[in-house]
Image 1 (cartoon, rainbow, N blue to C red):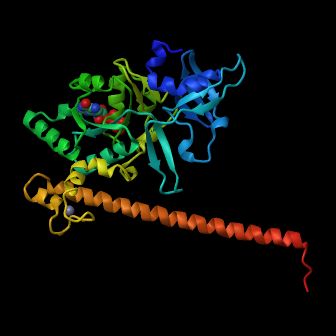
Image 2: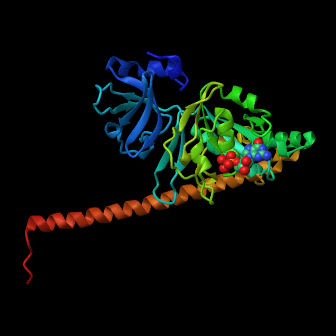
Image 3: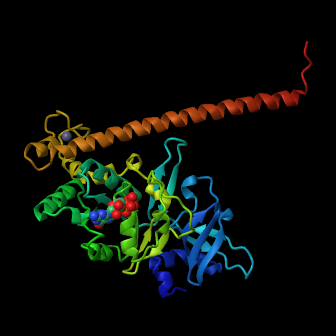
Length: 363
Ligand code: GDP
Ligand code: ZN
């Protein structure tokens, strides 16, 4: 059922096992490499097919077919339209909280194993920003990796070592690498790390993501990104795939939508991004300790004896506060949506009653 070309897209024994019931129905497995307007490109063992998603349109926007999904497609006869019949449950997903419009999130990439956070060394290192992207990455379920890009611009090795150490402190449990696409330094290490599974690229505009994607792919595959508006948002003029296998192994997801996921989307994952603080907190005397001024606070004690940088605690508090704010805002939005729906139903109810009664004669 599988071949080497197909395996390059990330097909493994676990997917194969999950797919077994669909295989028995005569369906074909494939990975969604691109989605647009109800159609998607699916790479199957027999090649890339274009399939309609109309049979898997869910009510939940989080379950809409997206790049990286593993799909069961039917094996239509030549000339017949093909359809996606089912999606395998996702292992991970990168979600954008569409907080400005509706309360629903939007899935931008499915089944990534690594979330690569590109951070430019051309500007001053902003650890708070790194922490937010790490929280966003953890939230997706993928393993975060921080890649400090443009390392060629930091000429002093001691300075570079310090920047790496600081970043490691801000990202416990996360691999931190330095790379330069210009000199090629560190690219082999990154390539090896991503050789198994699927990676997505996250990071601020200008962080060096396109350059990194091209260097990893070994060619100028991301020609879409080369055509840029002056505001830095990609213009999508060509129909490139958004998921591609890398020559050194592994696959890379780089969808235009992902470029827009930003710091405001780091709603969750805070616990994991600040795992060491949560570990200290287990030893606080009060289990609802706010780590402000409580007696027996193990977190404050860790700051006191130098084990925990005060900046980390500040950052943690800030992200928690922000999450609480976002949650409250979401609730307010939900409440107002419910109110609106209720009013509509009331109006509809009145309308139905009037219809049942028949036209009312005015007195
Ligand atoms: P993106 O917005 O995250 O996709 O960032 P780009 O890949 O477009 O890179 C932003 C800028 O950084 C471009 O002008 C690149 O030429 C530059 N750049 C990217 N990687 C490197 C690098 O390794 N070294 C240096 N010196 N510049 C780089
Ligand atoms: Zn405490």
